[in-house]
Length: 231
Image (cartoon, rainbow, N blue to C red; front, side):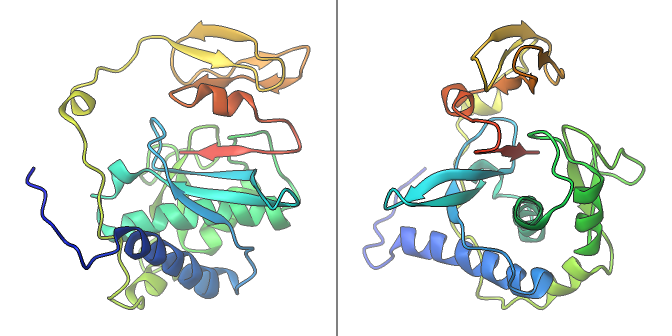
């Protein structure tokens, strides 16, 4: 790919500034501006379009800061779908802040599903109508004519995420793994098994998390201090 000199473009300000504008827009339209500020990032987390991570940053070693991240390799999708991913993670933020029935890390429970519906997204483990609406691995589809779709259609057209991740050839041809490592976020216990298993550590009473490229990052999660959500 030919690299062009664009000396007058501040790519960081453009990309992250628009990410913040999208967050603020849907916070106003769908959450009545109730969501707290978070740190917005881009992260190539394997097998996810985005994630919400609670208390993963500190401001001046005092205040805890939550994180919402998008996978740059999924930004080639229709912008409406990208925005729906942001709202999906905003619902995780809403549940962490205001929810009454928070569940184990990574699990999408009924409260989460109900809130998704209220903002115009339907949880589905298949991404299609008829899929399970609660579970560990969860995506969603946009409810036709729903509040999210209405809000998206009213978004100013100058808001976008113009920079897309470049998927390398070795990434595109990578074969699915037959076995993956799972790590307990409490004691660091490791086991190997098929992808998408649900394994619990009896001494810690915690669910083992599927180990990806950021395994060390995930293993630092402490119950009650931080949660990691992805789909």
